[in-house]
Image 1 (cartoon, helix red, strand yellow):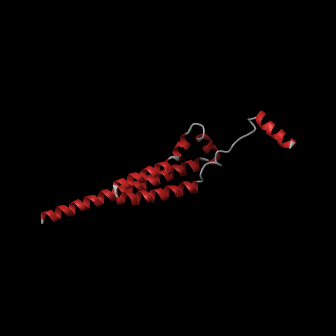
Image 2 (spheres, rainbow, N blue to C red):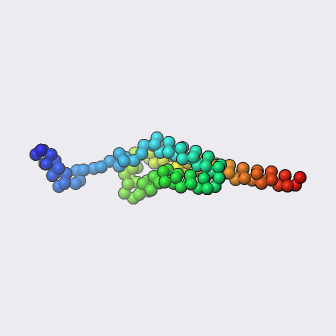
Image 3 (cartoon, one colour):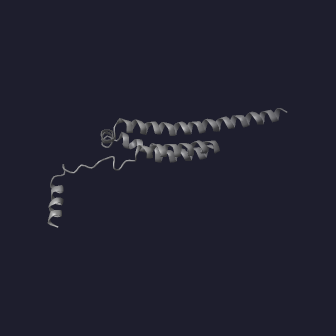
Length: 128
């Protein structure tokens, strides 16, 4: 009991001894990639279904994938993430963000392509 009290007192008196690791609270690079792929595919399929589904998927992706960008650009946390995990982690995180955005754009392009082909078919039927 006395040892615990001395240890706690030392931590309270010397706060510079305590150093919390940032990466203990951050997702792994595999977790970031899995989230980006999952929400990217959800976005791709949602945009193919319709614009409102796609916008809903963008909101979800923004919260779960692109929301991590806030931590990377935070002036207090961002440099510590770079120091502890290295530049490979940060570049991998940004690459996973771009992959998710690319999948959303592919779904959006597919939606517009399907819509224009339906309009062409409708015009052909009307012309007959």
